[in-house]
Structures are given as C-alpha cells and as structure tokens.
Image (cartoon, rainbow over all chains, first blue to last red):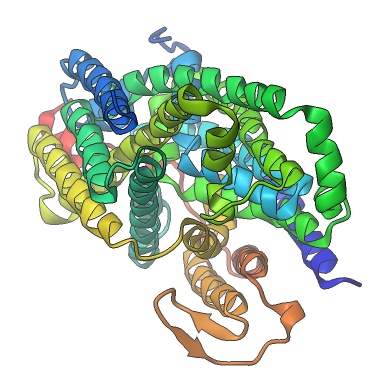
Length: 45
Length: 498
C-alpha cells in the first residue's frame, strides 16, 4: 500500500470518529435549559 | 499618479473608512461584555458575516492557490472542504457552549471551569503560542503583499496595517470588529468571484485545461497520493484551529442562542466557495507555464499581475488587505480578551471593576499590536510551515474540548496527559523521529520515511489525545456538574452588581 493512502485513510477515520463523538455528545448531553431561556429578545440583524 | 502612490491611497481610504465605522459604533461599548462579545445579541446576517470575515484570512487568498499549485484539484478541494467542515462542525459545539456557559467570554473560561488549573494553564500557553503565531503571519503577509504588488517597503506595510487595525479595534473592541467585518465580507465576496471569472476569460479556459494536461497531468488526477493525503488530513488541522481559536468562541458567546447552528452552518458553507474561487487561479499558472520567481506561495499575485493588469492588481490588493485586516482585528481582540479576562481579571486583579477590566483589554491590544509589528519585521519563518506545526497542537485539543463540553464524566487528568503526549509524539512524527520545537530539534528516534511527515504529525496527535481522553474517561470517570458553569458570572460583572 502506498504510505500516503494509509495516512489518508487514517485521517478519514479520525474525522469520522470526531463527528461520531459530537453526534453521541449532542444526543446524550444533559439538558440544562430553563423555562426562561425560550423568551429570547429579538435583536441585531 | 505612480503605482506606489495609488497603493498607499487605497490603504488610506479603506483604513479611514474602517476607523470611521469603528468610531461610529464605539459609543455602544459600555462594559467588558460589549468589548469582548458584542452585547451577546448578534443575529444570523451579522454573525455569518463576521465569521466569514475572520475565517477568510490572507492564507485563504494566498495559500489556497498554493495548495492548488502543489496538490492540483485535490489540493483546492481539501483546502475548501476542510475549512468549511471545521466551521460547520463548530455549530453544535457553539450551541452547547451557549447552554452550559451563557456568561462565558473566552475559551479560557471553559477550560478553567470545566477542567482544573493544570489544564487551564497548559491550554493558555498553547493558545497564546498559536494566537501570536497567527498574528505574526498576518502582519508578515500584509508587509509582503504591499511590497510585492506596489513596491511599498515591507516595514511601512506592516506598521501601516497594524496601526490602522489597532485604531478601530482599541476604540470599539468586538462591536467595531463586527461592524467593519460586515463591510469587509461584502468586499471580499464581490471581488473573490469577479477575479477567477476575469482571469479565466483573459487566459481562456480551454487553453488552461490543455496546458495542465500537457505540463502537469497529475494535478488533474483524483488518485494523486500526495493530494489525497492533503484532502483527508487537512480538515483535522482546520477543525482543531476553529475549536481552539478564541475568536470563534467569542462569536459563539456573541450570537443569540436561537440562531447559533444556522449562523455557523451558513458561514461554513459560504466559506467553501472562497478558496475554491481563489484556488483555481493556480490552474492558470500551471496551464500556461507561468514563471513563479517568488515560489508557489506567490502564485495568486503573479497570475493576477499577468492577466488582470493595473486595475486588477489594485482590486486584488483591496481584497487581500480586507481579508488580512479583518483577521488581524479579530485576533487582536481575541488575544486581548484572553489577557483581560483570564490573566487580568482572574489572576492579577480578581476584584477589578468592569471599567478596569475594559482598560486592561485596551492596553493589552496596544501591547499585542506592538509585539506583532516587532516580530513581523523580523520575518522569522514561512507561513505554511508555521501553520502545519501549530496544527499538531490544534489537533490534540479537538476531542478534549468536545468531551468536556458534552460528557459529564470526562477525566481532567486523562485530558492533560493525553494532550501533552499527543502533542509531543505528533511533533516527533513531524520531525521524522526528532522532537521538532520549531527553533530547534531534539533527536530521539530514526523513523522511516513512510512514518514521518508534517500532516502525519496531526493524525498522530489527534489519535493519541482522542484515545487517551475517551479511555481515561471510561476507566476513571470524574463526574462534573454543568450547573457550576451555567451559574457562573465573570467577577467584574459580579463586582458591578449586574
């Protein structure tokens, strides 16, 4: 195998791993929002 | 009017416009929060514009074509997709940050509250190295640009650029940066799409393609090994940059929570087209066999000077200078934020009033600008080599930041050991077996060629820190209560009774 292909594949695995970690994090994260949070004032553009 | 006078005139007109805009909005700056996070009420349009203006740097205009010249089509794709993915990947993190740390001002706040002091100091040191490196490169790029296109002495170019940016950042902080970013983004987006069309119209797309096929056919191949490596690994470097960069954290804190994901996604998608547009300029050089006396990094200015004439060069200067100035402004404000919030308010004067913190931020901005001028005038290294070296540090922080923001059992000691190990081993792969500390190397091993390289260093650094962080969290979980961060207020705000 050409070394560059091996490292390229490793790079793809790292990126996919990171995206999966973020996905798992967003799904399982503890919800900290409170009732007042929804009433966000309108503001700048 | 001479060409040089015209160049100076453009810089003065653009600079005066931005200083005027900065002055106009500076009255809105009432406290440190306004200075650092623009009042925390920024919407989609202004938010996307400021993210774009910050992320379109001098590198996007100069290094994207260089990637295209070196790695061909895959180089341009890698540059564009990598940078775009990084901003889009930050969107869910930004939304989470707004939820867990609503009163946050800097990335330092997160590290201090979420982990422990050893992680906090390690991160601040790494961050300052990275930020100062970036400021230095933007200052150098400004000097090189004005020198190569208009023959303005390098020193004059560096000083003039830094002083103009300093003027509007010191006066209005983040609010000034936001208002000028909007104008700068409009200018960048108009020019960046006009240029490739104009150049290809002048050079002839058919001639460019045939020339590429005849001279460097590998630039058109999609299985080019070096190009594939760049395409698949460079996103790690960019994602690490965005996740560590305080300017992105400030924008996350500045935006309204409801528009967070949309704003970062729009900015990331919009950004992708900028390096694609500038990167394709390199193909004209390849296809026409254009001589590059200044090396591959000068490919964009050389192509513009050859095909766009005087007017084209002037417009190109305006584009590049807008990109440089907006990035430098955001960085100055971002690093000053770290100083006023994390060093002054949390270390030097914990009982500081909001006015004192604000004053320290302005003083820090002036000092940083002076450091930028002094270091840039020395021209210590090249842009690309510094960026890839710094990318190894960036890659090591991706999973620790994600894990710390989303998982409540992340082990701080595991993070600390993983980051240090990842960075050190990554720098050793970068140096081919010698620990590469930029100014000197410490020989340790003798790695074979296939196992060493700059981009390989980023893969190794990311892998070690990710595995170390996640495994230590699984084996030795340390529960954390996110309400501690959510209920936290900066001490200057507490002092002021806000």
